[in-house]
View 1 (tube, rainbow, N blue to C red):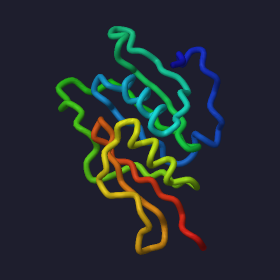
View 2: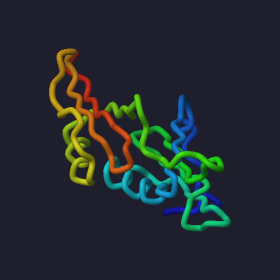
View 3: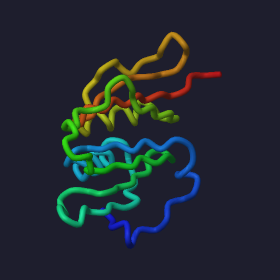
Length: 142
């Protein structure tokens, strides 16, 4: 775990495109540690909440060349975090089976098995312990 104040600036390429920013309702530290184990994430920095140091104001991870930002901050009276509904995170990788097996070994559960799909790619959908679904996709032969 690194403190944002001392962390090096991430590669600019990681900061392009759409960056998910997820509020974990008090479990951001736990989620960051889990993603390091499940998806080989690199910790780019964590900034604790000044009033509640066990909670994170901001954290930043790199997963498969992209950025994921997270926080424990929520507006006053917000509903507790219960995962993301109607969407999933998609990881496009060259060694899908290895990514899939690592995610399941870390504690993800199968939503849809990882297998060759009718469109030609190997794909599966798993859910992490925080209620977020992750698809692993390995492009099929051209």
